Length: 347
Ligand SMILES: NC(=O)c1ccc[n+]([C@@H]2O[C@H](COP(=O)([O-])OP(=O)(O)OC[C@H]3O[C@@H](n4cnc5c(N)ncnc54)[C@H](O)[C@@H]3O)[C@@H](O)[C@H]2O)c1
Ligand SMILES: O=P(O)(O)OC[C@H](O)CO
Image (tube, rainbow, N blue to C red; front, top):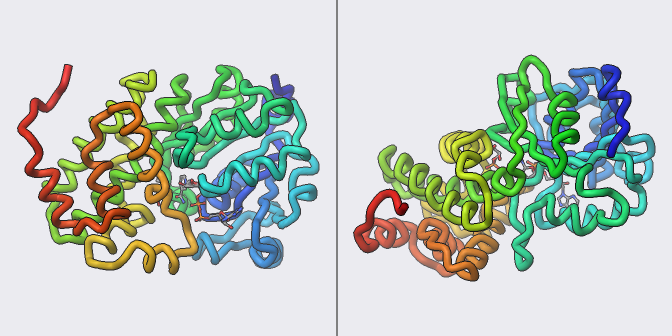
């Protein structure tokens, strides 16, 4: 277990954020505002150089000034040299590769935090499960936690009130991470159900694509409300089949993140869906985006996972058909509307 005296006994910790995208940068700002020493690892050397010279990251977080004591580096060894806490903020499909690359530089006493939302293709692992597997032998699972919830980077960076959850394999680690992040504009609850937090906070991106498609296709608020509500049932059905707690789906990583992602203009997943609903092709949208819309890859994972487990996930199936099987978005909605008649709650 960590002996993070700088967190437990004093105001400052040394945190390295791996990934200087919009979320990694916004969280670096939250931590730096609280006086922690933050180093941002950026994949692109020019992004690191810009952060050091201009204290901003316009490639990923436009219009935001960063505290001057945030340092950036494109070199893993330099970025991780003194870290007590290592926070992964990469896209989900590269987390395994990035974690493998930094593993030789990690130490057993470091705390590891994932803020990555997604389910790995083929393994159907959550992101802390990926970290547990890759970092095993160096870092114990008790050192690993995840921070999820309704939290668009743009609002966090503007220091607008945001409330999230931390979940960990260890109650003590969760408490330490809660303390690390808590500030007047960033409130952190603890949730003991790490699987439920990661499953719900990842599947909501599929529902956000669906909500975007509905909007882009010209449907109204009734359709969005229906997708949010039935999407929540779907998230719950898969999550509870896997052993997650029902209450988690009513919490911040569940309905909280589902609502914000399905309705916010900041959401990349909703935006991808909206453009598809307006007739654009997925490949054209993705090839011109420098930011990640996790729901696209997570749709593949969750579709396969649900099939394997025999869990009914009609919205996920419809999104999969629209994204990858060439189904017209309007036909996708028609398919959902004309399913066999059902009871709302299956007991
Ligand atoms: N942006 C948000 O508001 C937000 C909020 C909560 C959670 N998240 C989650 O955080 C994670 C990161 O999202 P983001 O918004 O910061 O992404 P982003 O699209 O803004 O940035 C992606 C980052 O990953 C890096 N990257 C891309 N390919 C890489 C590779 N092969 N190896 C290493 N790094 C690579 C990019 O250089 C960039 O720094 C995602 O899982 C996302 O769902 C994002
Ligand atoms: O912009 P999105 O769609 O990736 O959503 C970002 C966050 O997950 C919202 O909580």
